[in-house]
Every structure is written in structure tokens, then in C-alpha cells.
Image (cartoon, rainbow, N blue to C red):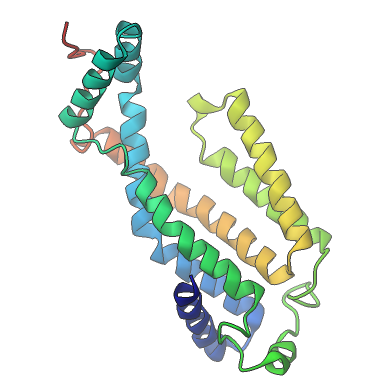
Amino acid sequence: MNIISNVLGHALRIIFEFVNNYGLSIVLFTIFVKVLLLPLTIKQTKSTKAMQDMQPRLKEIQEKYKDKPEKQQQEIMSLYKETNFNPLSGCLPLLIQMPILFGLFSVLRDPVKYSVFADQAAFVASDNGFLWLASLTGTNNLSMGILSGVSAYVMQSVMTPGDQQQASMKTMSYVMAAMSFWWGYTFPAGLAVYWTVSNLFSIAQYYLIMNPLKAKLANSKEVVIDEKKPRIKK
């Protein structure tokens, strides 16, 4: 984890040396990381779309073989093979991203330790606020708590398909918003800026890239599933 944090810390320092504003550096750094992770995000989107398209046939298999678990598993694996779907493909991008996100959290929490600034004095001297924020190291900032919570709620709502807006998903959106509000309020403002910008970028990314990608996949041969002609062996 320290290796990842050190690399990210050096990247943030390079950005800071160009713009000479710590708040703007965090914004640009957040966008840089999101773009860096875009290939993994696209891969995860494709996997999610494939799983959604398979749901009718999966439910049919589960219903038909509900009393025969071994047969049910065989048919599900046959379906995966037929559609070239790897059930782990949706998890791997997320697992790869997690160390990066944890490393990023460490950098923003302690930028001096990870070489963003030469020493604490340089960090304090550079912390001259951002927009309406007097300091990016301060905590208990209500405005950043609200921005973090609202942006997290909107992101969760936007990225949840309409046909999945069930009670459990809505509850998750509220929980995510509440947690984000608490993080934004209690963590240093610099971390809250990162979290808010990350959420806003994810929303824009969904509308500009992910939503068109899903529409394209629905009409492409990448996911070939004929719901009208289930091929379940008797």
C-alpha cells in the first residue's frame, strides 16, 4: 500500500508544482485518477450489462431446477460458457481499484508523509484555502458534508437502472448519502473535495460514456442472449 501511496503522492506533487494551488491540485488529481481507472470502469460496465441481460434466463434456470441444485449449477455454468461470461470479471476491476483508492486516501490524509510537500511547514504554507474553504485541513465543515452527501446520493441514483429502483436500492442510496455526509463533515476538507469531485465526475462519466456504452452493448454482438429462445436442456 505504501508503494501505491508514494506513487500517487509524487503525482499530486507534480500537479501542485504546475498549478501552485493545493485545492485545484486535488481537483485535477481526482480527475487524473478517474481517467486512469476508466478502462477498469468500462470493463466493469460491460460485465454488469452482460449479467443484466442474462437475468431472464438465469431466473428460468433457477426456477426449473430449484429442487436440483447440482443440475442448476451445471446449467448456469453452461449459460456462462455459451455467452462467454466470466462471473469474476465484474469483481476484478473493483478489487484492482480498491488498493488505489485506499492509497489515495492515505495521501490526502497525510500529504507530507507521501512527499507531496517537503515538510509540515511547506504544507501549512500551501494550505491557503480553496473557493469558499478557508483551509483544506480543517474538519467539521458543514458545506462539504452536504456536498459530499448530495453528490453521493445523486451518483447512486443515476447509476442504478430504473428497473432496479427497488426499496433495497433506495435504502442503499440513503445510507451512502448519510455516510458521505459524515465523511465530508468529519474528515479534512481536502478529502471531502476529492470525494465530491469524484462523485461529480462519475455522474458526468455515466452520461457521457457509460450510458452510451450500455446502449451500444445492447445492440452489439458482445452480449448475445436471445431471451425468446431459451436453450435449457431437459
